[in-house]
Amino acid sequence: MGMLFFIIIGGFIAPQFLYADIDWRVIREIDLKEQPLDLVTALDGKTLFILVPGQVLVHDMKTYEISQRISVGKEFDRLTYSPGNNILILSSSTAKTLKVIQLERIHEFDFSGSPSLGPKDAPVIITVFSDYQ
Image 1 (cartoon, helix red, strand yellow):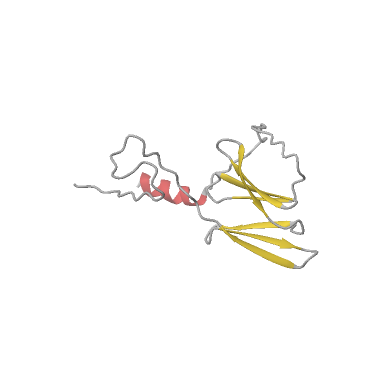
Image 2: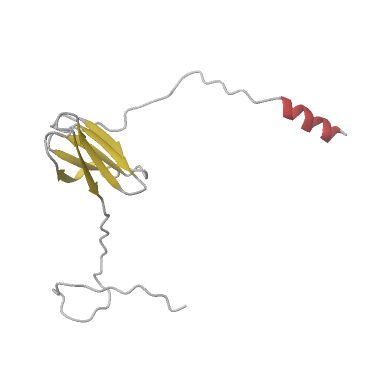
């Protein structure tokens, strides 16, 4: 009987959360040397795309460095990221145009010390990942 009473009472009582303040701190400041026009972050939070006049800067949030620069026209002033398609969409309010950029991640692997066949300076490397279990 005591358990039934607790469930009924618990159904009518909602917990109240009160926030008195927000604790914040600056963890990094990025000096761009160009005027930022717009920015978006990738869904995983590891990459920040910053639109500056004529370029999209690809900022790595782990190393806090600009890892790549994508050249675009200086007329673009807005930037959107579509995570489902992994594309950047740039728009220009003055030229009334859109530019869609498909992004593909390239993964680098360290094969030093791995068994291999053929010359070390071959123009193509074929790698087989397998599991014999």
